[in-house]
Length: 348
Ligand code: ADP
Ligand code: MG
Image 1 (cartoon, helix red, strand yellow):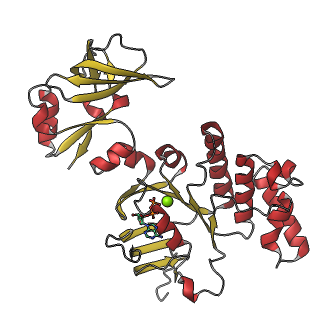
Image 2 (cartoon, helix red, strand yellow):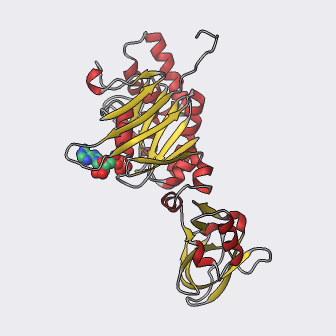
Image 3 (spheres, rainbow, N blue to C red):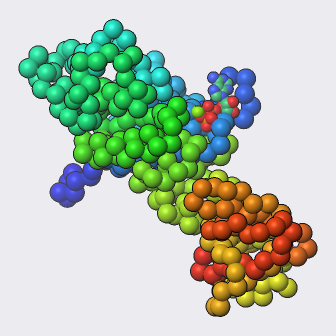
């Protein structure tokens, strides 16, 4: 620190980490690098088998990378065989099955990780955790007397007991119904921000990731294809896989557009893009002045509750998907749809 320069280490730095399971020729995680700052929520999304759980298990210190380095708060993360006790007290994994002690009350479950602490402190910390996680009224109950969402809150409170700096969660809410899940996600977000705890969150549900993350990483074949804010991944995905993973989208190669949509074709050529995407929700039914218009022959309509998803074909048979506020009549109807050039996603 010669020149009075203080260097604050990132919470987590992962540098070219790879892991292949014995007997597997394709690595589960391949030369993956990313950085995460204290208190951030970083989600990893990707299809099943993309390496999310393998990555998380390496971060938890439960699995040893074949190569590469992981450093946590400026120090190398210890490999499983170097640790005296499995795991790291500053990094806590929240398991999918909650893993609560069945014969202990909620308060006793929270006190359990605090056994080595002073009694007065432990009791005070349990009270704080109950309050922080909004579960005070559950303190005397046994795990079997709790709903799934309540058990999840208790598991989260217990993971926070020892004041970790980083939590790891692998698809933790997959058993919850959508309403409870969305409520719980907001709650988790509030609790982690209040406690200034970072989270690496693994999910295949893009809505969950979009809702709570500061950063999202997209994994495919064990590689990190893009990392950025939720809006960046949604609005400016760097490749077609990422764009498609986040929701229905129409992808066009410029050649296919030259005749039907000369304005679009020109834009794509100007930017030297290799393809262009239009998200289903950015398309509106009807011919709207100032927007690009296409004719679509309707082949299927699905009711989604708040809107309809419409599938159809453009002249020449190319499929086209969009959303509408009303059902659009008979299959086979030809209708006009419009979209703004500003909503296009370019691929290079
Ligand atoms: P995800 O969590 O994204 O579904 P995983 O990390 O579980 O992905 O798996 C990544 C790849 O590694 C997949 O091809 C999977 O089949 C393989 N894999 C995962 N666990 C093991 C294991 N214990 N032994 C061998 N291969 C595994
Ligand atoms: Mg997994």
